[in-house]
Image (cartoon, rainbow, N blue to C red; front, side):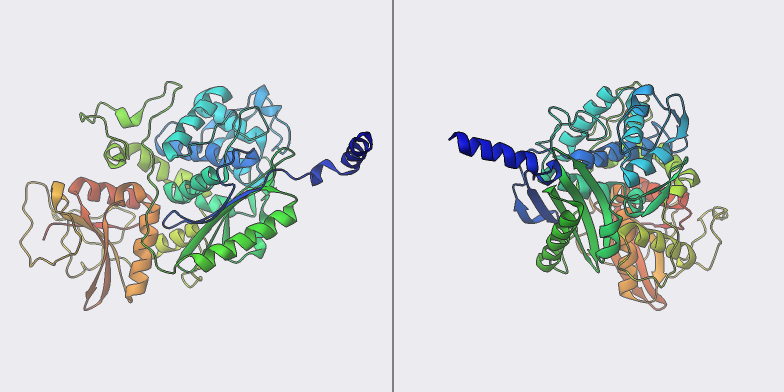
Length: 482
């Protein structure tokens, strides 16, 4: 017995700590539907390491969208944030730096000092931010996750699962698609230096890969939540406990291949349910509960009602100050295998240049950013509330709900083919899920092309959707009841 014990201790001393495998877990999910395609130890609570930063940045995006903070806010770096161990950006105590640079450093370089500074800027302290992380995780359905910090360094009780991190990855893609390109940047300007992506090897070697986040600590092993898109299919693969960067990447590539093999080409898209905004515990204005909305509190899942109250802050967050986070424009002829966000950018640019814009019913000129052109056929412009829209022959639209005054729609352009129009509708829906969720994407064939419409909206929702698209320099006009 003594000889066996001595041999075990001797071998343990000879084996490098980095080679001692952490527990392994994996999950593969069809991102479009949320269907699980593969799972192994997916509900085992393990150390997430820097996968944690997906939640840190998810909350940062939520805070920006709801007016708690802006990407141009100067954040004062605390001594606590500056003292975080590597990986780090190299922040100094007392230094002031824009939030956008902290976000880039946390997403691309996985900088621990930047992640802590983000949490303190939003909630006042890392402990308060961790409490918000846990509230948000619960709202997202991450039932076996508990956070203790904003960066993911090993701490007692800081645990998650492959399933929960896959769920979070899906929300990162679809809840804030305007920022998703950040996860695929191989390099980024972080203000004080240019940083390189921790996952650039997989991003460069796997066709269609566009994110999301790596993580490593001795206790966790080599972790990764990856997403890739090929044609109409998008797959998310999560691995905990890899033995090395190379073996982890190889395993993730194997799981992504498995996902694309098992995922159907066509599937009904079901966006994940975005949790209701509950504001900050720091004492900032809770926009979702502003006095301007004298309505009962929204039930869980009824997030569209809070969007109307938050429209002003949302519009501010989507104006040019946030544009440095957007991907560089790509040519209209770029292949569809680009990332979701790159596709969205391309489509929004395409909509701006191709979509026909109708003048308002009262004769006022369109917004300065939109050039007036000939009003397209078969579209009814939004009329003033006290002026009835002239009656027209109704077009039957299947599955369109007529309850609650949902007789309105919006048009986002006319295109030469049905496929192009459907692609525009899908990418616009991903970019504007908060107002277009539940609407019907409808392509209407006319003499001059295919109109891309969203139908089944209330007038207020249609108006808000157009305002938000126009805030991003995208033309859009309303379709009245007909």
